[in-house]
Amino acid sequence: MAEIDIEISEVAPRDGLQSIAPIMPTAAKKTWLSALAAAGIPEIEVGSFVPARLLPQLADTAELVAHTRVLAGPKVAVLVPNLRGAENAVKAGADKITLPLSVSETHSLRNVNRTHAQMLEEARRIAELIGTLPPTRRPKFEGSLSTAFGCTLEGEVPESRVVELAEALMAAGCDEVGLSDTTGYANPVQVKRLTRKVWAAVGRERLTGIHLHNTRGQGLANALAAVDVGLTTVDASMGGIGGCPTAPGASGNIVTEDLVFLLEAMGLRTGIDFEALLAARRVLAEALPEVPLYGFTPDAGLPKTFAPANA
Amino acid sequence: MAEIDIEISEVAPRDGLQSIAPIMPTAAKKTWLSALAAAGIPEIEVGSFVPARLLPQLADTAELVAHTRVLAGPKVAVLVPNLRGAENAVKAGADKITLPLSVSETHSLRNVNRTHAQMLEEARRIAELIGTLPPTRRPKFEGSLSTAFGCTLEGEVPESRVVELAEALMAAGCDEVGLSDTTGYANPVQVKRLTRKVWAAVGRERLTGIHLHNTRGQGLANALAAVDVGLTTVDASMGGIGGCPTAPGASGNIVTEDLVFLLEAMGLRTGIDFEALLAARRVLAEALPEVPLYGFTPDAGLPKTFAPANA
Image: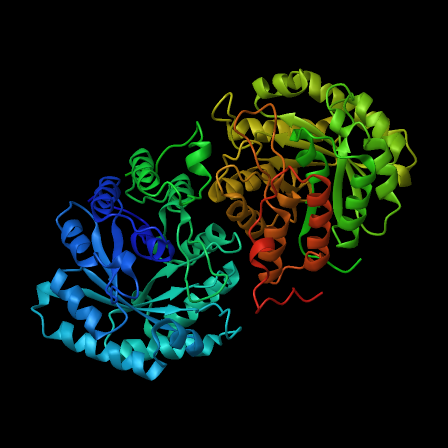
């Protein structure tokens, strides 16, 4: 793969689809994942290993992991809510496993019906499971600190609590932690401050990624702050689809297409080809014609002056 | 007025309305301008002194200047394309006169049917006119460098040309210059670099403001860069209405409501009350029900954790 400066993790197949009612057929998902890979997306969160009765949209996650892991390019990430999910992720052959830990315990109970202590216990068990695998087969294990910038249920989330839980996740055996603005509450100053606080506690190499929502239109400004402070992985969703069904009012991931333009125009290499990305967007639009796709750059087109960052 | 850190210049009454077909009745405009003033907007561009046959929407600019200048709070800005417009602006009592000078000469000819040399001559005449007024009655005179970040007609706009025209405008007698991303081409790195180049040429106090479009969704990221580098005035448009009718594909100013949230959440005082701003938005929505209003924060509401910057 060409060298890249900022890694975009495409989360639409998981975070996007999970809040959309019409089920996207597995065959269409595969075509879409292949198109995303062809566009040079370096990481794709292809699904979530949750019981099919809870999220029928993501019932085909194992099949999608199998499909995507043989494509050239992308790392294959999945979300898991517990050890059982992690077992399935390992079996399917995922490259990365993300366990969400909501800093707001109220949201944690609502989202996965578990307390912090219970989730940290799951993290320990998952780390143990991964430890039993041959070193070359071990997926990367991330603990994602959701509602890290505030919660629609609890309101303010103390930054000291974010730091404590980051430390607890590392102690439980995670390889790294991520910050997630589940509710669209974050602002650029907060993004930088909280990132530095977590770095001070767990080390810079243990926090490289951020997950932002565009609920209040601040997504790209926050992404700019994240890149400015030195984070190197930014989650985004094609067409801005997605949100969080259990955090009221939390809708809309940042739009991959607009983020690619932002970064490449600033001279930061993403490894992503914009025209091929638009082709992947067309696959999504055709498969889910009733779902609105967001993003300005796809409508406006790239500027005449646009030159991709030097690869 | 309370002390503010970043001055938002509300341009919807001029830049927004000029690209909208349905004529907003003068009485409704007055109600709206009063609501904007009541929200604490520190500067409002209320219209443009152009011939009524060219822009019937803005034919009532003189009346709106007269209405707004007696409201408590906002400075009253107007756009003028030439000396004749400036004479009318002075007669009406505007606090600030902006003359656009498109760095792309092709766009200048399309927009105001004048070359750079002709526009600079207008600038000299306007400065002369202002010089004849008693010092306390002199409006501030800004030259606005439109298409400064690239042009949909000419493509790349050399930064050296932006700097030269900034110097030429100062030599012609402008008090200050502004940078305008007419086409939505700008990126944050470019915003900072071009600002510093113009500062180096004309002095920091001669360039304080920027006008950004959201054509490719980059508006708030660019505004963040502008504030980071040290610019202190940012144009924005309520509901994101507006664009430029003579630069194809250039639509959408940045949304005042989302910008206020961005700045205040970062601890930067705008002097604007968000609830009163939403009341002004309702006035606009009721007066122009057929015009789509953009912005995420009005729909999502402010975060539970939001606290305005300390005034």
